[in-house]
Length: 374
Image (cartoon, rainbow, N blue to C red; front, side, top):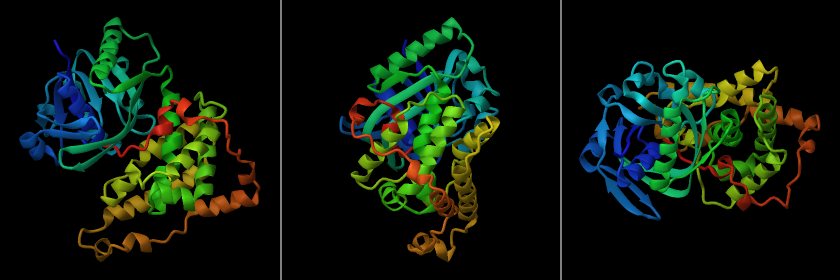
């Protein structure tokens, strides 16, 4: 009997998993929001270099309407996680696993307050996929999910079997998967990629390529600060990780223009995922007696930008003016801090490029992930 999957949040990432699982013969149940009517009528469509696939799925407007499933994939934005509080348990079977496909850190701890922690699996996606219209997602590169168990205790035998089933199912669905032994390391590595590029792309209203060209020093200092914090918080970060990030940044500059999911959320006037991606790591660092001044400055500026963006009315002339964002001041508390760091000679201590590093040999998902998520 094929296993059943519940997809909570069927946007880009959720839709990608839903189509691949459904066309591989699994029973798929999808929670949808604005796309519900379209998907109910037309099905979900995935465009990729492997073909153009449209599949019917069981679609729902509310979690409480969904049946219990063997494996539940959480692909919501973390800003919508409150809907899980009173409904997630209704989807749980005796052997169900809950796989969290969200950005940030500390998410598993929050969901562990709702369900048995042994059931929780953290997931980090390295999948370049975009929702291009209602019910239609386009896959443009990378196809890797890294997972790690949340529970530090020995997992029940039936749940281990279900985890093995999940790995087998993704292989059947032609999705690459790797298992990590340390969830915090997996989460921090993704943050090292996301925190500088996502936040600064909003602050400076920029594509990732333009951001690297114009604000390279800010990116480097933030990256170094986050790496140091991650190590102090117990993450197993390789010694050459900063140098490898330099290579990744250089490779991104040669790509067509891409935009972070946070920048796209801002442009669409959606809440930014600031708690999971910035507040939580800052608080974890403080618990280890570590300060992150650049990251905190970026977080505070993003809070103001997010609040102002969400408070604007639809008929605000600034929103109608295509040049509005370009007119937004680029003066930044980050820039001021960077200038201070430069004056203190900190920037000069940043490592140079390691020409011997070979990107093709480094399989870390955070290195390759330029995903437009959810």
